Length: 213
Picture 1 (cartoon, rainbow, N blue to C red):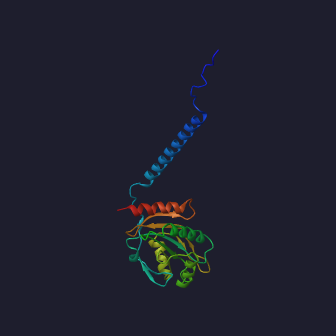
Picture 2: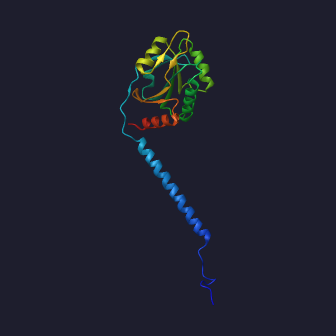
Picture 3: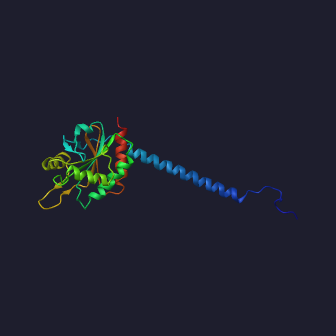
């Protein structure tokens, strides 16, 4: 009796079957990744949100002892936070996030970073210069600002609508938010320093503002 299949008849190899399965899984993975990326791009391409408010006029002093005003930042996108150099609470984390942003945005001259001291009596330009040097801040990209106490307080609380409590013999208690400002000097979004993936979220907002016409 002869066998059902001739030994000379080509048989489908096991390897080819496995190969087709692997190819199918790879294609499914790539299509799934493309869909997720597409959905993310749709989510981030939302209609333009109305501004939260307008940044008021200010004239403060940088770590280099130079004046910086709102007009100097016209046409730029900027990220603002409030810190002080002797802070052992949220400030180191906030400054670390800003340093990461500075690295990510180092080649984009349309974006600036602004850290305003809420302890201006102690954070003189020279103190801020040392602090900035410790985080390797480029003074043309990342400004550390100080000024008269009353003007700083007014700028934070009335202008930027953020909490600030300064009591005698106590360290300032301040907002941990990052504020993203557009080219027209309008506040467009807030992000808390303690939020997960806050740097990535800020980068998304900055990217959207860079694409705005």
